[in-house]
Image 1 (tube, rainbow, N blue to C red):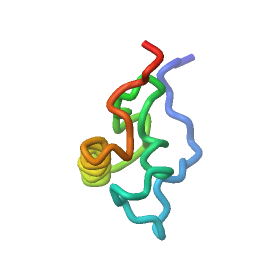
Image 2 (cartoon, rainbow, N blue to C red):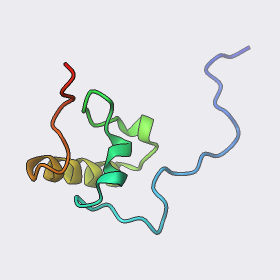
Image 3 (cartoon, rainbow, N blue to C red):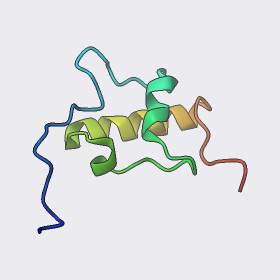
Length: 75
């Protein structure tokens, strides 16, 4: 038994084709931020590298404009 065997079923991408990545869309951006406020990795998000870069830029812009918090306030 190989425990590192990949599953054979295809996973759908986490961004649909009709969704655009925008810093004003905070409900979309919150899906890519952890509970601690960190940007989740590309592997966890199931994004392409181009999508991950645009998500990171959008999250950083939203943080600067105070649309998203920089970190969780419970720490």
